[in-house]
Length: 489
Image (cartoon, rainbow, N blue to C red; front, side, top):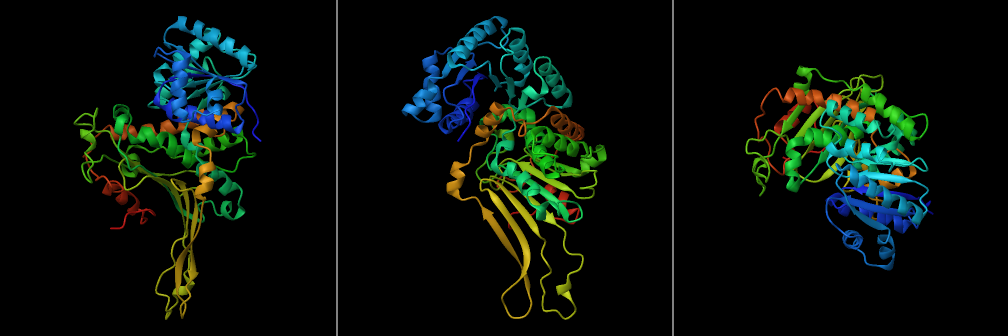
């Protein structure tokens, strides 16, 4: 049985696409499961002029239900037209917050969710404190969406502005990838299985590959995306979080503070490249025309001479005892061959292939053992090993042992935002990014960005429906390796 949690939620940007598409449906799931029952209330805020009833109609539409249960859930929703830069508006918000806290017996528990432009984060956080909306009776937690800055300096400035009003343990930086089932399974796979963790090091692993492939283009996000690019949009947050989970040491205990401490240690040991190393170990791409897709530079709200990258591939090195010499290859991009996220752990081959003795009929060399983590759309694991086939003589061949989550079970799996809102209610920061994690990720990414800004790229350089530019293959082939997932040529 779920444990009931109580809190007042105030959503800044409460009429935005994210709120209607992800946040309110996720809260409804928590309501249906019993985490939210009677002791909760929601205030949506935005510049729009809406009545409580009009707001509830929009929420009803977003959760896709008009059942009695849905009506009861929606009755906890309220609306305040609000200009986040107007100090006077916060007194109105405070009055409504105090009214609802008393009505629903919320014990002063508050969650402030900022789903809006990051340049307003500090303003909102400051007024929440100075205007007395934050109280000391219960907990007060600030949940913020990315982007958290656009480089280390802007991220640091933003963090310092938030720190004036909220403690680090009260700030929950959302990265929805950390709410995905198979991302959370990385810790279970590693630390729950001796057979895996004992081999999880540079003595047995040749390389690790992380691929976040998107089949769609920038669509309506073009104006934002062109100021960001794949490096900032995907590498600095999602990929760096996945890599830190793969690279971290075993925590002392399965607590948010211990897990975060180990992730920070891993990111501290990540080699920050000099100019020559960054130019060699990272490549970028931008899609052109092909397969009925128009080139990036012809997308709406994209400049005709844009040098924004829609693809990134790179090689990461950790300078520590566990991973020294073992590269982590990453890649992500728009309009690639398919939509999926996966991690491929490539093990070293045996030092001696005893089956390839002189005169042997075993003509096929031993294949590489590969452990694959399927993150999405399918979820599960696969392990490729060598075995004897069932024919006359002695021939080895690769076989794959695979586990995929049953589709029916997948339907029961909580959505990432449902998990993360639940964790914020509990005060569990395990699956949120700490400031130290964010800062080390930015320091690494900033160096790549700096090098790229020194020279104009030769764009476009890959075709929609491919797996990126030829330079991505050349990057890994220089090390006499290849991508595990590749299109048949």
